[in-house]
Every structure is written in structure tokens, then in C-alpha cells.
Image (cartoon, rainbow, N blue to C red; front, side, top):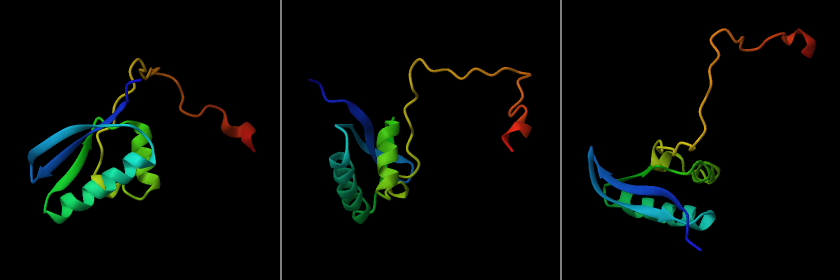
Length: 99
């Protein structure tokens, strides 16, 4: 069974990308490995970012208190899901009945 790619790790300094590679797997093991990587990278004077991050991974990083360590991850878009906007559709119609 193939392992699911959950993000791409990018090591950066300033605006230059120095290295990148895919992150595979899921769960707290990946979060722990990313935390150790981020610690080593930051100690060396670089930054680590996530690209095409799976929304579940982003939520786990948030629960672990690591959201700020990775900056604002670029979240992968869900395929096949499009938002439909109806021009004259009221945002919250008839909220009077909620009292």
C-alpha cells in the first residue's frame, strides 16, 4: 500500500528556497518529525515552510502548537469541490425564528 503524501517541506533563507522534499505518512509521528526538523533548521539560521499541506496535517500542527513554527502553510485544495455563489442569495435569511 502506498503512503500518502501530506505536504512538501521547504527549507528557506530569506526569499531563497534551498531544499525541498515530500512528506509522507500521517499522524503524530509526522508532526513529531517535523517539529525536530524545524528545531534543527531554525538553530542553523534557516526557516522551514510547508507547501501543498494536507488540511488534516495543518490541523494536527495547530493542535500541537506548531502552526507558527511553519508559517502559514500552503493548504492543498480539495479536488472536485467548487464553491457556488448565488448573486441574490441572502446570507442569513429569517433569523427571527431562532429566539
